Amino acid sequence: MTISQQISIAAKHIKEGNLVAFPTETVYGLGADALNPYAVAKLFELKERPTFDPLIVHIASVEEIKRLTVNNDNRVYELAERFWPGPLTIILPKSNLVPDIVTAGLPTVGIRMPDHPVAIELIRQSGCPIAAPSANKFGQLSPTQAKHVNKQLSDVDFLIDGGESAVGIESTIISLNEKGFEILRHGIITKEEIEEIIPYYAVPDRDKTNIVSPGMLKSHYSPNKPIYLLDKNIPDFIDYPKAGLLSFSGKDTAKYKIVELLAPDGNLKTCAVNLFAAIHRLEESDVDYIIAETVPEVGVGIAIMDKLKKAAYRYK
Ligand code: AMP
Ligand code: MG
Image (cartoon, helix red, strand yellow):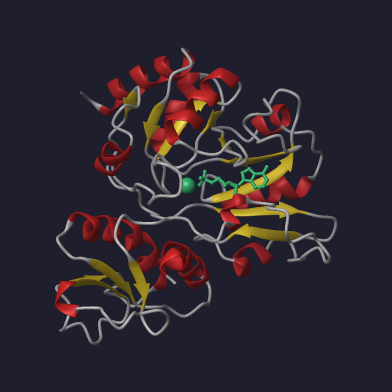
């Protein structure tokens, strides 16, 4: 089936309130009509996602902001101009059109315009914004290829195979306040890049016990094999010839069974792009555990380390 045939079948499914897995530039999404609370409820169920965890709404035209939000904040359009389509999600006060289930009861909604022709065409043909989390079971590894989706969500109504996701990690999520923006989840778009448009300003005294963004959960993105961080939490019992290494530097690789070199060009962005796909390969290989080299926590390195720490959290 051609990709355009797949998109038109998928759009029919979305219109009928069914679920479609589709490619975006970040990771594969599991999509439902964002304005249909029944479809969205099915989505939470299939993904086994707790309903306290809000979904990102994907749009194909900036104009949609007017319908979905109550917001006259011009900064949104400046950000959209610079970063959309692209991996930046902006949290805005929601309009009544957005069902509460989408936002997990929050008065705000996260919106982004994906930079992927298949995703954009799907949204256009469906005639509605599409709510979509990553197309994996809750808490597990995000899919960057159609076959990864099949591993976890084989019973989705329709899956569009659009090749490999180019960015490979989830969007950067920001919220706006009176003085600037705050980062709720780190991603490939860095704080420094956003600061070129609006200032960074973290609201003091926020009650940190409240989960503002479930992307802040301590354990997430967990592969189905134990994962340990080099120089941080490697247990004594590790038998290196049975381990797979996620290598950034390419150094000290000889003792491992399999080595995934994440950034042959030494670039952190390349590392982010390859991260989840490499972990998927190690999951499928016969190594007993995964060992990840840590990367410098600057720029995109912040997002990479955030994912690695969450993946390794339960093996502390
Ligand atoms: P994903 O599973 O990649 O789709 O992640 C969606 C994430 O976006 C959620 O887990 C939250 O962290 C964040 N998010 C979505 N909507 C909101 C919102 N209204 N307020 C704060 N965070 C949000
Ligand atoms: Mg996810």
